[in-house]
Length: 327
Ligand code: A3P
Image 1: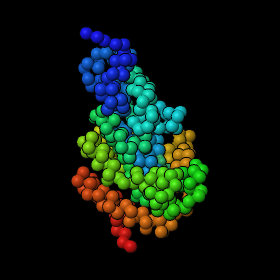
Image 2: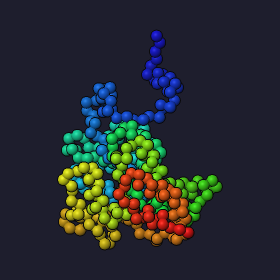
Image 3: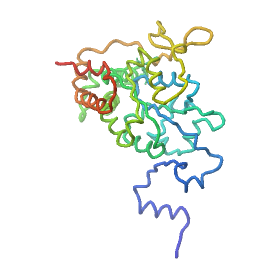
Image 4: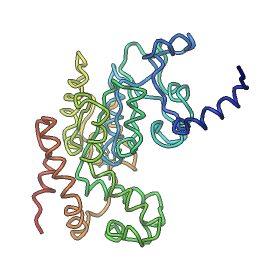
C-alpha cells in the first residue's frame, strides 16, 4: 500500500474528479458525520432563516431597513466590502468559506431566538446561486420583490448614471436597451444585460423553484411596498408565522419631502433612506417604454401563468398594465 502527503493526495483526487474543484458548501449541522468533527465553538444558529434575494432596484433596501426594525428579526452585520450586502452565494466571496459567511450573523447568545436574515439583491438572477443556497440552507425561506421590469431596467440605468458609469454618459437609455448583442462594444452590452436580464422574472423564479418548494417563496409587489409598506410587512410577518405581530403602522410613515415611507424617530421626525434610494429623475421616454413592454411581453406572460400556478392571490397592477399594452 502506497500513500502520499495531503497536498499530493489532493492533487491526485482533483485530477480524478475535476468537477469537484469548485466547492459546494453543505450544512455541517445537517450531517451527523460532519457535526461530530465540527468545532464545539461553532454554532449552527449562525445561518439565516430567510434570504431577501432581490432583484436589484426593486426596493430591497427599504425592505431590509423595515425588517431590521422588527424586534424579533435580526439582519446580518453589514459588509465593509459590498456596503450592506454580503453577496456570499454569488461571486468570489463564496470561496472565502463558511466561517467567513457565518461571522456576519449574531452568535447564539446575542440572538435571543430572533429570526436571522440576509439580503443580497444580486442573488435573484445569478445562475449558480439557487443550487448553492439549497446545498447550505435547504429549508431557508426566500423573499423576492417584483416591480415592472421596464421600470427596474430604467432605475438600474439611473443608478449607474448616478455612479458616473461612463457608458451612461455616452449612451441614452434607449441606446443601451436596444444595443446589438453581437456588435455593440462590451461595456454597452454589459450595461444592457444589467438593465434587462434581472427583469426576466419568470425565468429566474422557475430556476429557484427547481431547488426550492414554492411554499418557501414569498413574492412581494414592489409597488405595494412603496405605497403601502405596512400591509406588505404584515403579510410577510404572517408568512414567517411571527406572533405577536409588530405594529409597523406606528413605526413607519410617509415622508412628503422624500415621497416614500420612512422610519419614525423616537424624538419625532423621520429617518428616510439615503439619496441613492428613491432618486429623482425624468420619467422614461415613451419610445423606451414601448420597446421594453414588447421586449418583456413573453416573460411577463409567463409570470402571470406562474403566479396563477403558485396560487398567488393577486396579479400586480403593474403586470396587468405592462401586458395590456398594444402597439
Ligand atoms: P429609485 O431610486 O430608482 O426610485 P434597491 O434598494 O433594491 O436598490 O431599490 C431601490 C428602489 O427602492 C428605489 O428606486 C425606490 O423606487 C424603491 N423604494 C421602495 N420603497 C422605498 C423607500 N421607502 N424609500 C426609498 N426608496 C424606496
